[in-house]
Image (cartoon, rainbow, N blue to C red; front, side, top):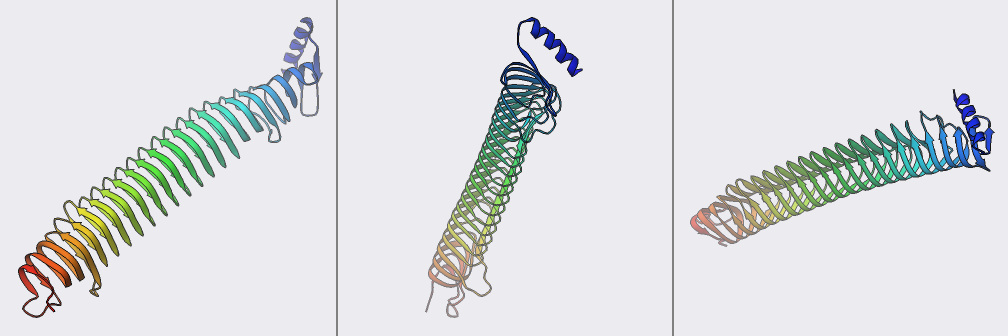
Length: 383
């Protein structure tokens, strides 16, 4: 079939006064019209400059110009296409530079430039440039540039640039840039820049930058920057910056900056900054700054410093009575197993020792002399 087509084209171009050359090298068969590798080539020419049209590329070496292939390619990992590569199935070469368009996809070890595909863009090593696909855009290792996929954008290693996808965007290692997905954004290592998803945004290590998600934002290690989540935001280690969530904000170690959550804010070690929670606000060790609970309680295992306000209770619970409160506390119950420095205002105030005052209906200082431990309205430390 191919030889019959080539013979007809040979007769046609001879009649038109052209100078066709029939090339038959090992693993190649083509009808080349032109001179010294320039012009028009029909068939599987390995090296050509100009317009080249082939059924299925296999073993190409160097093509410069416009390359059109119709069917599934063979092995072209050692070849280079510079210019325009078009494939009704998929254009393929070890290196593609310029403009690439494929019906089912685009293949190549390294693809640089502008690429379009109806189904997917798959580059086993690296993609650099602009890639669009109705379904998915991806790279087996690295992607640098702009990627837009109707369903997904992803890389096996790292992504750097701008990415948008109807469903999900992800990278096996680091993801950096502007990232917007209809469902989820994720990175196996670090995620940095601006990231937004309707459901979730997360990274196995650090999340840095501006991050928003309809449900959750999370980091396996640290989260730093502005983070907004419809339900929960948190990190396994530290959270620093402005963090808000409809339900909870939390950190395995330290939480600092501005934190606000509809239900709870908490950290395993310390919470520092301006903190708001609808119900509960707490730290395993230290709570410092302005801490306000709208409907519930505030608590710490060791120390509270600053302003603490809650309708039910502000508490330091320390069985060894080594807790320390410094500042101003207002709540129905202010209960400090340890030392109070400052003012507590409430219905019932309790502390081991006080350097300041207790103001409330009942005030108890554990270390005061007998008869002065529990007093109405006012209490202070009596030596």
